[in-house]
Length: 268
Image (cartoon, rainbow, N blue to C red; front, top):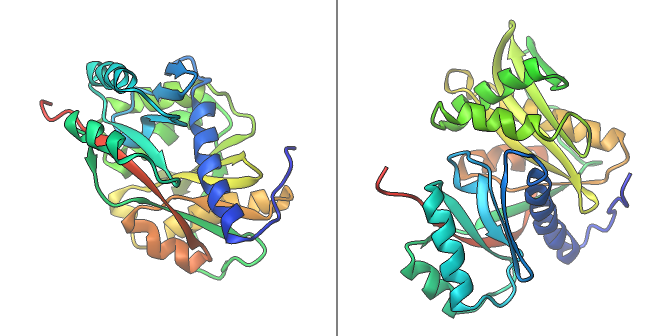
């Protein structure tokens, strides 16, 4: 097991939140279904899933105008929405202006949160007939992909891209997928990724008809409890506005903002 982080200071947690996410992207890039863009001063990946979070550029160091032109041209040619991560460190306003000139839009920063796994609020209601299992074979992964696509409201053709992505990574740590079912019907997903000394939570999604029952909280707590059993002390995640209150009730607190620009193909 990698070195586990126990330092709960705000500055260390903010860095771990960012590093876990970047290592997550690089880990996804191991899948044969992912297209990689790599230069000494930046790293990019395209999963083929039509969601900005699943295609992007990060770990950027002093890009030139030509670098930016080259990257944007490549990503636009693939027509998938993508993110240019500015990160938690203040970046040159000149970069932002160039990116905006290329059609990227800067909105609210992504919130970075962390929680002490020894201080979780685990007394939260969820359906008694909710069964959560780790995804350990391709048959279950197909159900995971289908459920995640419905939960995130992705185009249905994203189901195959999702399956191919995670099938290409296998079923061993540091990444584990979880499927939640009620009476045998898949209703929710979540994901655990161990890196940067912390436990990262990703892909928490509930199908529309099963929401507002505490399922999202249960799907988050299951991987957190497993990470704690493995000796991890800190969990991190990057919530949407929809999920912010849920994670605060579990025990997550905000430690940083991650600035980013998003490009979406408006011709489709």
